[in-house]
Image (cartoon, rainbow, N blue to C red; front, side, top):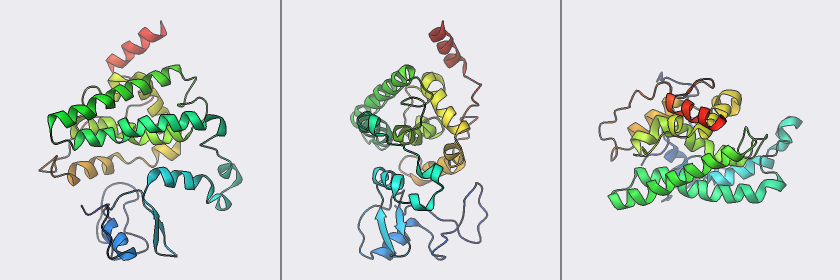
Length: 257
């Protein structure tokens, strides 16, 4: 596994933010940074990677650690209104931690356990808990005053769940065989929550590149997709806020009656 690939200076690739490594002009893959830091490195070349350019040091490649670091470590560089943002409020910390545990094990990681399973038994042991936990998230959002997971403010729980749910229909349904239901027709509350974040919160929508997502998965996993063919659907990648597929629209009408 080579790790995340950087564009080269002579390439013209589709999508935003497709640029060479701004620090190392000759580096073509994330693994080059790992080996530059430690020529004897034996681990995986994973993203996200928090890299200290001054000390030439990888601080962390664990997303749960990095997200917590960002809460406070760079506050002195931010405008006061952004530095004051609290994504892990004290009164919700226990609930967020509890939610993180099962969403990570069954949803964030569950799609990978399903997709990379090499036996029917391993696949079913992963895919059934995945959909049971999606059902649980759907129920939680139905009970939440909204529009976010724990009410009127975005928290860490929203951020950690979003990264998987936004990829679910475009990639995980077909590529990882997570096809019991899709989000847009099978989970109306999750679907509404997802689109609220994508369309109304620039930090979510502007950093979600569907073309990058689909090409990365379909062209990286030869053991799953031998010929690197990228499906054209679903169309659109994400629905507008005011549009529903027929099954979801009927479910929402039934709930609101």
